[in-house]
Length: 209
Image (tube, rainbow, N blue to C red; front, side):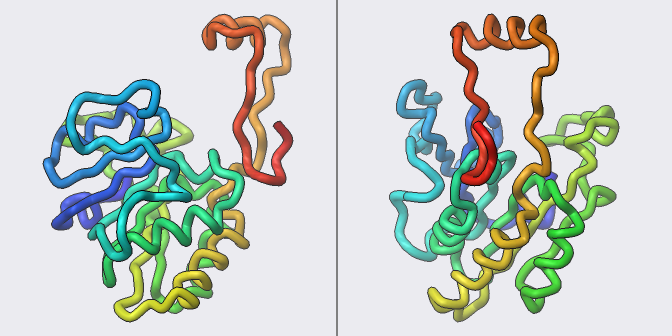
């Protein structure tokens, strides 16, 4: 989804909201972060239980920060982006997927004076860590672009904040709709799948629960 230009860069790489992604097992210079690791830590020593908005790393630590299907799960996208840009090295890359609102993403990118660009759906790779996924382009997820931001070489906290605010204000990373389950049978299936009688849909600050 991010393309070889991003994932083939020299590390260290930070994978936010990594979950069960195998990327951290493919490269020794990848640090995986996910709050779920507090309850279910994965194998390996490079997995950290933390939130993307409060990372236990110093400034300018990582060459690349990746976030796949992450931004829609936080209440304050501006806070998340500011923290992710903080830990990226000068000239390092922050890559986020997907951009749910491509038109808003294009407007935001145009405001950032070359610090960001969209990786269009035509450039999304049909292979994943070397394994072919021929059906990727036929899914709705495979056609959504990614956002790649380059941290300015001398980015001050104010400049980084402006970049984060521009992207967050555009709402490019926020899904345009909340997926609803219209039929009672569908809700029962989801409840059984979750193993609970209560189902919560995570959303952004201004999205309904």
